[in-house]
Length: 98
Image 1: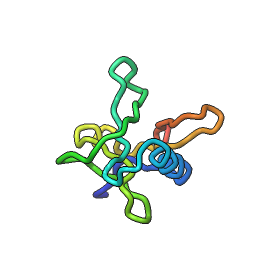
Image 2 (image 1 turned 90 degrees about the vertical axis):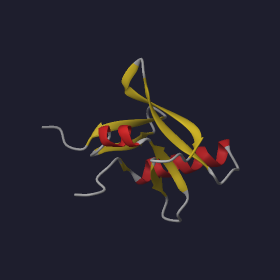
Image 3 (image 1 turned 120 degrees about the vertical axis):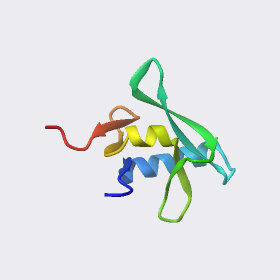
Image 4 (image 1 turned 30 degrees about the horizontal axis):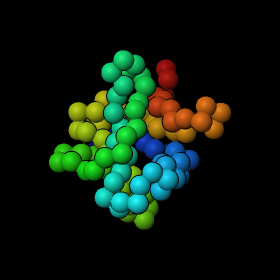
């Protein structure tokens, strides 16, 4: 289906909102997902502004939360971004493992 991109769990969204509030007061800033070049399964999260062609994940209130470059969005399609309290970190998992 169209628009199947990265799925962000409610818990991860909540943590992203908290991270945004802690790190910036600029409403134009959001959190960009980038791939760690040395560890492709690891993601780096950085503060950034929306750029042309970005996929944007918003909160229910319409706050820009996540920015994902188009080429990365296609790679993350159907994956889930979650937050694991035990790890105190964000994790990306496949939705279904066969």
